[in-house]
Length: 119
Image (cartoon, rainbow, N blue to C red; front, side, top):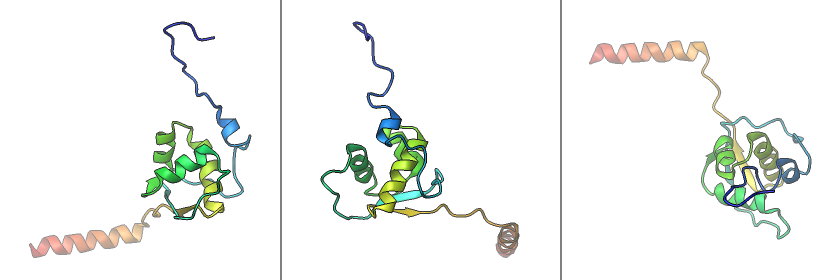
């Protein structure tokens, strides 16, 4: 029980309640740097408040990590919710840009060296 002058330090709703007890989704886990945005589809009336909040946040591009920070929920919980919204067509995901391969870096270095020599 919380005494006078004390603050609640845990979330009012436990993460496993928000995800319906799920720790993962049918999709592969979304990397934290994946960008998501709302699709613009109308949301069903019966949609949980957490899902609605995510869609509101994602009017512009946000990363999975940013959504988790805004919601104050663990990234694993947010990944489950985002996967649901993507599957239902309410969010669109843009996968992270893959790390450049070594040959690409070498080519860019040669181009940079060539440009520097012209200046």
